[in-house]
Amino acid sequence: MPRKSPYVMHLTDEEQMELQSMARQYTSPYCDVVRARIILMAADGFSNDIIAARLDTPRQIVSKWRKRFALARLPGLEGQPRGGRKARFSPRSRRPGQSPRL
Image (tube, rainbow, N blue to C red):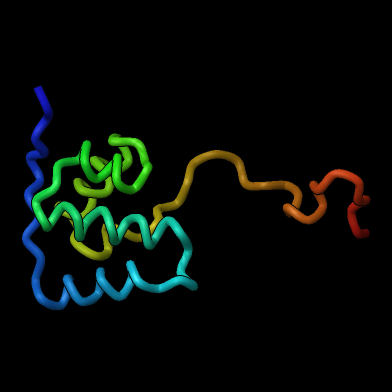
């Protein structure tokens, strides 16, 4: 039996326009575009499983962003600080075949 999300999406006109703008921007980070598309599709009434299949992303990711948007609206779609130790080396110095600049 398919699961039904407890977070039903009802967007204001401003949120709808902002999310559509985010989903159309080709210069935005891919993760921001996917997040906006997830919410737009959820507002259209699609289930998490259908959204995940259409966007080729795991259902758990769809569920996560749907919940964050329901609880915090647009600010909930912004990235949060990640845990763990800070990087000691820049990505450039880690590339194989190149010595780090000193």
